[in-house]
Amino acid sequence: MSDPSHKTLRSFYCRDYLWDLYETIAQELGCSVDYLINESLRHYARSCNYSQASSAEGGASVMMQTTQNALPTPMAHRAPPPLPTTANAMPAVPMSAVPIGLPAVPTPMAQAPVAAYGVPIYAAQPAIPVMQRRPIYLYFQGQCYRIEGDQFTIGRGQDAQLTIRDSNISRKHCVIIWQNNGYAIQDLGSTNGIEYQGQRIDVKRIEEGDRFMLCNYELRFSFNDR
Image 1 (cartoon, rainbow, N blue to C red):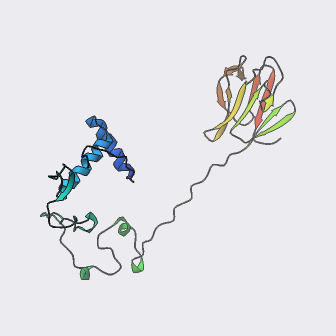
Image 2: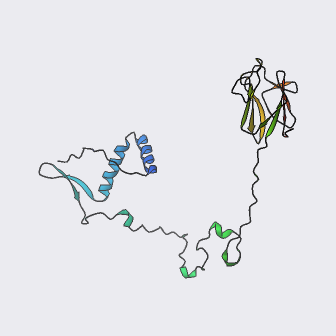
Image 3: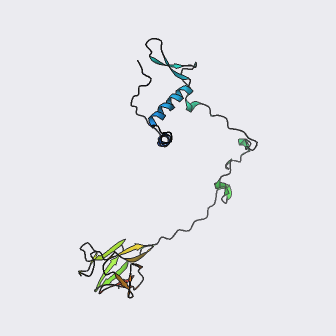
């Protein structure tokens, strides 16, 4: 005998947006998604004139259809409801009154300048220039370092790209970084900091010929490899 309250685990495909919607409704109503799906199935069966009934012998539940049709008409084959008509509705235009080659309803495409044969003309848009990254050159103790990546670290540690073996230099003293279409030097919380023109700085955009001091060490920058 079939128990109307018995549930069995099912697997089915469901559109993602419907599942998200049911989860939202379940949270608002304080129930589970399973409950909502079961209720939806039950109400849909009722809307198709199916009902759950018990037979006289043994109370076995059977599905009863109260209409004469064997199956309800599938939704995909039902005729769509007529559109509501209002006083401001657009009157129907016979196809013979629509010129060939032109859309029946104005679209944004029709607003463009039109040449012969109804072909729209669009002005060529100028190409947007792309800012190319210029490498910058660091001069330190007679050596030239070409910098063209996103960052270039300077410090006492072995992992620095420019290692200065001096106890006054922090392990990660400063970094050269690319930002806002230019290079800048930034202190990494070092003990003795960075000096520019006699003043201690935290960060500064690097310009042609700039010179910075790390303790007694000078860093000179240029956009020319000389």
